[in-house]
Amino acid sequence: MKSLFEQNELAGIPLKNRLIRSATHEAMADEAGRPREQLARLYERLSRGGIGAIISGFLGVHRQSHGYPHMMLLDRDEHIPDYQALLEPTKKQGTPVIAQVAHLGGKFHASMVKSDVLAPSTKNYAPFGVKARAMTPGEIEETIDAFVQAIRRCREAGFDGVQVHAAHGYLLSEFLSPHCNRRTDSWGGDTERRFRIVGEIMRGARQEVGDYPLLLKISGHDWDKNGMTVPEAIKLARLFQEAGGDAVEVSSGGVNALDMSRTAKIPVEAILNLDPQYTKYHPGAKKILAVLLPLGVKNPRPIYNYNVEAAARIKEQLDIPVIVVGGLRKLDEMEQVITEGKADYVALCRPLIIEPALVENFLNGKQDRSKCIDCDYCLLGVLAGPLRCYMGKLPG
Image 1 (cartoon, helix red, strand yellow):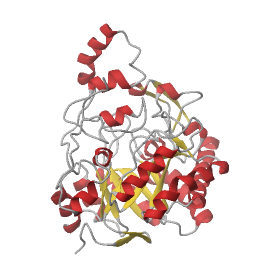
Image 2 (tube, helix red, strand yellow):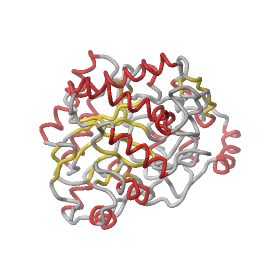
Image 3 (cartoon, rainbow, N blue to C red):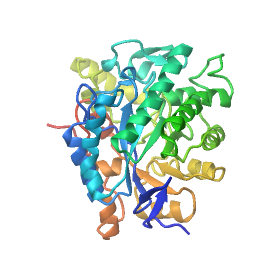
């Protein structure tokens, strides 16, 4: 029987336990997308805090994928030394770091739009204030190559592996989703054609990096009409395994829902004061929006352990490891996920923002659950500054 705190290997990467820091946008890159020193210090703190492995915040694979303030980019070879410097302190601690590579597709923040926003099909992304146009076949091929070359750069920079981001309504997730991908060519239609872009990335990456660990993050389900379902996610995960993938992380959420992270109450104050779309509004307009926003935003339930059952169903159909993320806060529930075989690894995002040393505190018996109150201010705060915990209160 597997246990949460046993030593193990994930795709050949040695881990000291089965707890992983899930990819979290840190907003700690400069304007060119190079990581700042404060990010190296954060990874070092997470390493000292006992986490088994760190998955980085998303790294854009192409200049056109740079869709969030202070997002990392690895779209050119000259950035490789910056990432080598980023990893050096954490490597001394012995904690593996896996790079998450991504293209944000149509889910671009309006404040970052400088050229065409691309997606599988033309779509108006109302919550983000942008309209995306459908990619040409040539642009799809260019994007595949951008992913492949970014994966190569990650290996050269010293990352222990790569996770391809195909969840949360970003570009690859849009291709996988029947809700977003309405193409009638060979890049859309049935499950196999919608998976084609990921399969081509895997084929190209294997030619470049051989047996280098390659993981995938997918949404097990979302709240988009005719969107992702668990049976569809199972088919896609099996295709990834057949393409030579090493592990799958199961999350949730699509282009319209806030399902990727859940909260007891819509963080209206944070939206109006931290999101650049709303900060310039007149105070009177903000009062009206404070009433309207909760009515127009889906707030799914439950807010804890909400991807575990989807992960368990996907794991039943796979031979490669499954990681689950989403609302896991209590130590005994994390242990239960592993001992009952519902997933092979537990990934944490928000709990490690407030407590980078949470895993060490679990081991030392100092606490048995996270102090995170799930206010979601942290996930909006990265639009205004570096990642931090707000505990439900804005500065000042």
